[in-house]
Image (cartoon, rainbow, N blue to C red; front, side):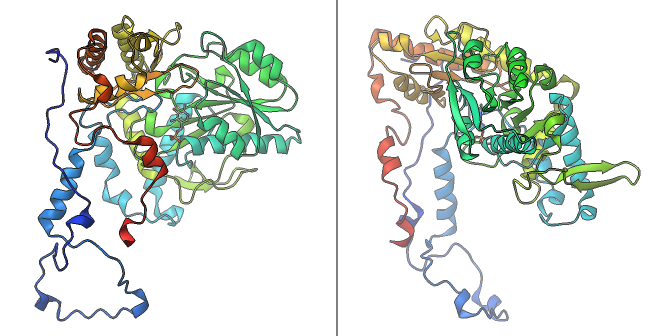
Length: 492
Ligand SMILES: *Cc1c(COP(=O)(O)O)cnc(C)c1O
């Protein structure tokens, strides 16, 4: 039996086929009297009439129930805690949606001229200024569509800088604790990547950095706080070493919620960083929704930023597009993902001068998890935990289980599993990020569920290797799904 304190999934899910399987010839999802259509003649040339669409034919209740039923199979942040590490799946306040859905924003056309979109440009300008203040940097571009796209923008800036200075540099150093997108970005941008092995504590090793820091090195790309959820305390020394060689420091600031309002990127010697607006400053994400990977830079890189940037002329009270002198060009059509900018701005303004509390609550929550679980799981680094905490699989292995078993068993308790097997430098990693929006009560329910599962593993009273058992779809063939994708269903 479950421990009384823990949650368990009890909801019912309905079986539901594909909508194409529900289809029956001649069924309609609308009720319009044919006579009402008599006066409307639609003269579309034949070539525009698609006759081979094969759309499903179902009644209105069937459509509604189909999608509502499918939605009950789904898991989302509005249903329960979403502890994915490295993803920052925080609750997205409803006021964000309310404002982003304002018809003014919804009806704007992407190619409108400056004079027609002054209120929007004012909003973007305000967000640019706030993010520059929050990070203590000199320039910003809100164009990038996501974190990885922000990385690409930042690395292009480093490339443009060295080209401008006629520096022959083609290597970017990346610690082995980096997010997977970092080495991918550098390679995509045409650099050679050299991996730096972290020290025992999970930090960048200064001696290893010294060894690799040749004249060929264009920059270092470091995630801070890193993927072990710990702060790179030697960041100032790191930037000093790099700058002595005119190499630049790129900071992956996707995890900025751990330090927002607490630090100055400029004082740390960072030349360029990206922030994930869709992690640090709310926004619903996951499942491939849009993001926004704002890139902040210091004076060295300011005039290389993508164009346009929104600037303000106080004399004429006019917001206008500015093209930096050596701009790398556009990274995105339009102005970027405006909806994400609006949500980020609302989130920032709703915290106001208390914005540093995001970092405090996020860190406090991660430490609550660490404290609650340190007797049953082994933490990956003894250094202080920031916004997320990583455990290894050692305790589970002793009991004859794997990280995957714990992750799948959590689903039966109504929780989304945490990130598992990442970062790669931790054996069987279990990476948990609670974010600042969760209450201690929710976190305790989650840690109680983990403790309960581990107790069951110890007592060996239940086969946990088959979990989840209470969900509609249970164990799936994950490899098979990835390898044998059925894409031709519609044309069958
Ligand atoms: C999420 C994340 C990224 C990538 O961001 P996307 O928006 O998913 O492209 C990069 N680095 C770190 C450290 C991250 O956590």
